[in-house]
Length: 241
Image (cartoon, rainbow, N blue to C red; front, top):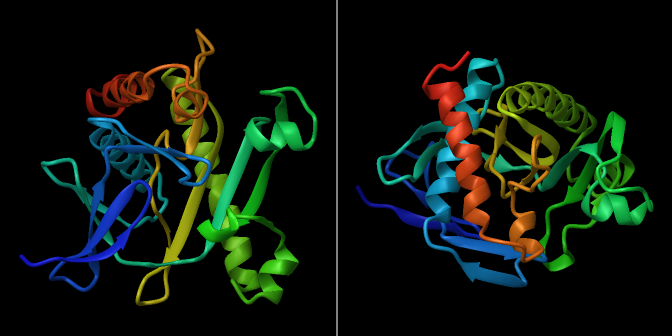
């Protein structure tokens, strides 16, 4: 099998396989902060990210949410359906954290009801700026149907993930998702689902189990990722009720 590099990003490399509809993803042993301005090699992080993402995509598939994930490979890489990514990051916030808390001067982890959905324009050079519906339409980034569909899907994903994480003693603070169109024009959940793009708190200890550990330099990020992976494995693979 011959593969050509399609994309090299902060967290993963993507390769075109012999099948024009299938892409091979390799997750890097790298953590980044400040939109890639801070980078650090962390041995084994890539496989943790890949395993968690595979479990969550498979869980959402069972829950009826279509996505690009196909299968995880033996080396921890993954095969996914090729999509053209909509250049919008859809952020769903159940509790105040990060820039949201500082921007509106609200306490960290204040419950947000209803959940807040935000769009950010996907552009590293512009530091992924916040963007509203009218700006999205005026800049012809997406149409009204796509805006509505991504927001509705994000909230549905939110409810499914809240339920899952609640069962394994984890609070879903917020998360970021991306969507893309297949060659047939179908909109699918894409990118990844892992503590790289979520904030997760252990319900008992209140400790972060996500990339905030790296951002804030408060420990080994792999410990939290391994905790999330172990609990998901116990719930989804071992069949814990």
